Amino acid sequence: MENLKEEIAATAARMVVEEGLEYGAAKRRAIKQMGLPLRAALPDNDLVEDAVREYIDLFCADTQPAELLALRRLAMEWMERLERFHPHVGGAVWHGTATRLSDIYLQLFCEDSKSTEIKLIDMGVRFETASVVGFRGEIVDALSLQARSVDLGVHVGVHLLIYDLDDLRGALRPDAKGRKPRGDLAALRKLLHDAGT
Image 1 (cartoon, rainbow, N blue to C red):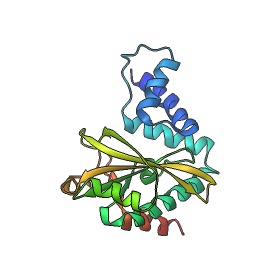
Image 2: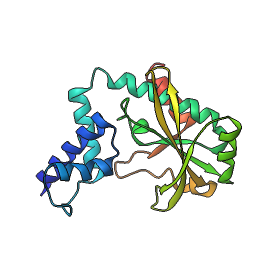
Image 3: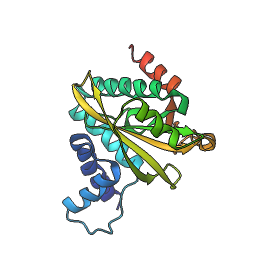
């Protein structure tokens, strides 16, 4: 059973890196591609992340670090623009597995959820709204926009997930691997500084 989960994770990892799929979509597509039943036991996200890191080390070691750096710079730019909303970066950009096909996920912690929309309108930024599952399983508003990465020469999806300010208290608890699941602007600046930029 564990070997099968590792195979699914490896197949999903290739899709994450080469196609920019999110983990859930990649796992579902992997079982379909492998001809497995839809109810097959799926690997957890930690196993998929480990497989993504292995895939990057094998096939993208020469390009991924620069792509990650460019995405972190773009994330920092948007976090600075939205600093009053206590932005935190998460996902592949925070954990270091992002490639040029990865989107940026910022979690904003606001007293008034509509204030972020008003800020984007004032900035002249076009965005789409949706509802997504938040980090505690609750439904949260998401504002999605396209931002140009000068370093990569492409537009990158930036997704702003809107939380109540009170949610910030539980947002920084370490994950199963003992890592912070997201980082604020100071933490991202430190990552960039440590990378020599």
